[in-house]
Image (cartoon, rainbow, N blue to C red; front, top):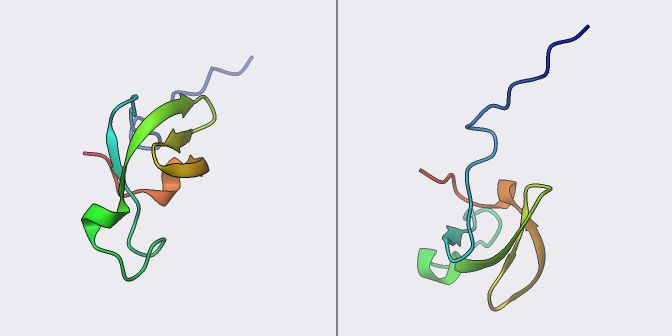
Length: 67
């Protein structure tokens, strides 16, 4: 029988509602950091989030690493 896989804590950072996330510069070229930062309104179970003032769902891979 296989052992259950342990989740790598670095692979999916903890994100919560109200947290500010910044898109990587490659995703939004030509914009300053403040213009690439949005507030999380909803966290989905599939490593995706919905953001305030921005339509659609976004993968956590689109954002700068959360420290």
